Length: 282
Image (tube, rainbow, N blue to C red; front, side, top):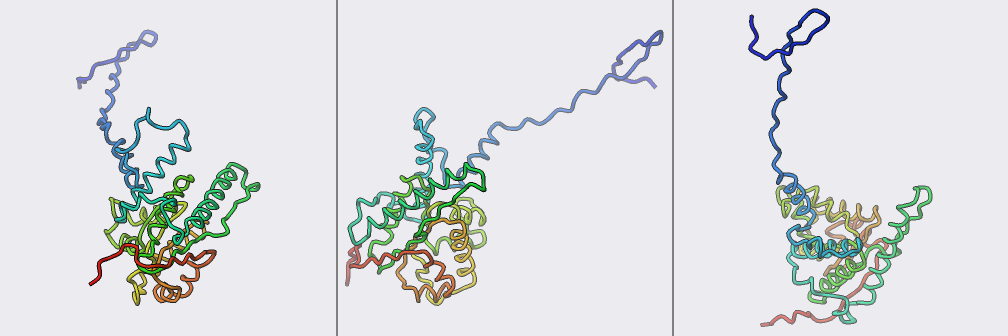
């Protein structure tokens, strides 16, 4: 049988040997250039960062620390918007009155920031030489009636935390729990990604703890709230809670043990006064 393939004639001594030419390599399908870019964009969006709003290279600050702060600002604003509180991004500690404890909030965030900077430096050392610092006050509870200014004060503290180099996020308690329901996570996130987003930030603000959950002590509420709080306490990450309820009312929803964990290493700021929203009455 005669082969149709071209031959490669090689000579060894006095003999000619005809060998088939090597087959050409199989072609590979080209990978679209946009695919990896789209993948990176998807990852950033899931982390609350919108690449379309990023500064151009020439507009970025020279300092890595300043650039990181810009990223943190965007993540903070995104978390407010995702929780339906976009308008709260304008509040600062300077805009608060004394009844909202601006100085206490400033000191609280300040000690968190100092501990974070210290621990970042310690992370550069060998494990046996590290001295990890944990803040004396890990959790803060802003308690008071409706319209007392708790959420405004918490949002101002979050904005200040970002300026101090901390990653801060905001979420309402009920909304966080709803996002953990099947197929209910926002912005294309998975349930696991929702957990990671709020478990790993330096300062988490949980607004309206147990609000409208009286006598609603379901396994979903207790388990997922416990997982969030326990993860943050065990990793030394701070949480600022706002609530209209007292300890006993929170314990009715979360249970005595979990309510005690919320109050562990915590300071309570009781915000009193009339409803600042000044609603029309009839």
